[in-house]
Length: 424
Image 1 (cartoon, rainbow, N blue to C red):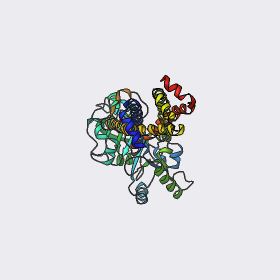
Image 2: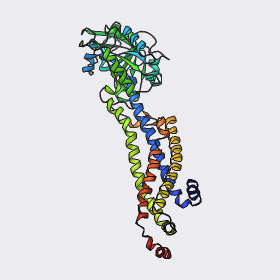
Image 3: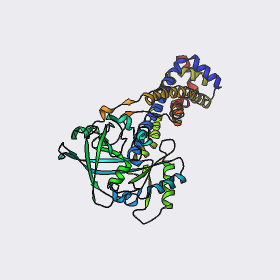
Image 4: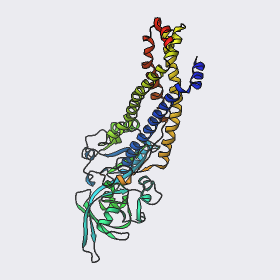
């Protein structure tokens, strides 16, 4: 029967070509949009993970309750031993200490008097030199606009916008003034080794990046850090795995001490949980929308085909074929069309997704003034789900459309068929 139906579809292109084109276009759009959303949402999540949240974050309970503090006096202590314990318990996950700080920057003139001042946010990294993992993770080499990465103590990177505002250039001196771990005022002199631009207003507005040991000495945080960030193996965030690790860690470190370490998964930090939820649900919503939309389109296509094949159906019923059999052969025919359209649409959608994944779409011009961290280049990400997600709307919508259109078969009156056929 299936071979008979396939031969009929191949020999009569008028009843198969239009539905196959519709299904191909719909499936291609579904696959492409799923890969696009996976890539865009994933890049946004990973960008936040690299700069601030990590896939996992260990911090004190006091800082977890008031994350806006970012103060040295609520930071972690004995970070080396804590990091070693984490690496033994969850091998494969990379753990890196970071110090985030807010400070006032003071730029002197040639005579040592204050020439310019401003408020900056800063980040201290364990290894910042060229080729180091932290530099690679943050893309510091690519972000350089002038100068070089810090190679010596007391060297720092300054964001390009901040450097322009304060008229700083590589080789210039500046002073950072903040509060140390004991609440006292602390000052440290730095030299600009280079300027960086991430292309994100939230980072470029006033960012200083320095070495971790310099920040520990300046803020009196010996073997300390504000956070210990964890990055899962493979480099991509997996919510269930991260939540399981955080739950296990917090069970082992259950304490009322506000300075005790506490672990959060990325989805437990601020609004990032909404992004994770959106990335997980949008693919289902897109598929559902396309199933409904394509079912309506193919229902109409089925009605038009039914009108065109009105005589054929009447003849089949007149020679004794049961209505139920005619109906289900029509549905089976639509499943074959849906399968062909799903295969071709999946290949087409994967092709366009691969183009976007490989070459990206530069939207840096649209991100001027953005206050949140979004990637400048949008890229799709092809995942295993993209290889089969199109078959759901492709086959289901064609079958649903045929089932709706085929109901007209049961309304045909057998007694009037010969009269109708004479007219036809």
